[in-house]
Length: 253
Image 1 (cartoon, rainbow, N blue to C red):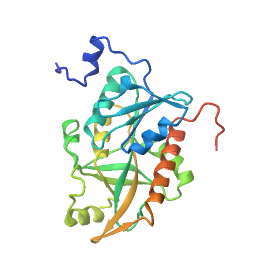
Image 2 (tube, helix red, strand yellow):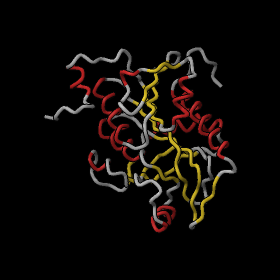
Image 3 (cartoon, rainbow, N blue to C red):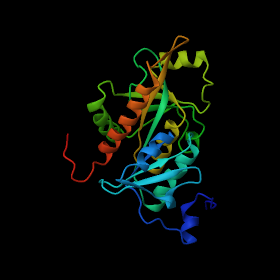
């Protein structure tokens, strides 16, 4: 029998906690500017009963299916706890991480919004959920469906492989060279954990990433301006929401 934890929804429901609404789709984001964007959006309202202590959750009021956005601190621990809570409560069955990242190699540029189809499991969490393996794959149907949305606005949007490494900015040149030669195009800290936990509990999950800079042979390529990265990041988020859960009554593009 599993021991109750502070984040265990079974323990809280026994104490009388019950959220009013549960999302059908939950997007995880890690940058505060997106929380501010949702604050200003009349189609979203904050739902504190679903939020962890170090994050916020917003739910839609005019989209179908009902979509939620979990605004979290960087890192995978709270994210996977939120995923497990939703599954235990009978809430969302599809989860997407939307994040900034680094890039690796010559076939990707800063701002090339990407959908992760495979993640290298250097994350420290996935081995607690799945048998040992080098990589974990995203849900193929949801992955392709998500790529089709942003690809309408971002012509270089592709399905790529990411290296999930929680030691941010501690990658060595030898590691980067190894993963570049293996076809890895992105590096971040959450995706493999999300994909592994989702697979273990039987729900769908991919990730969407926007690289802010790209490493190749010891050199770093950066965007011409941070404003361009911020624009892609913001517009990609809006396109992702519209792809996952269109506004009710919205005309298809």
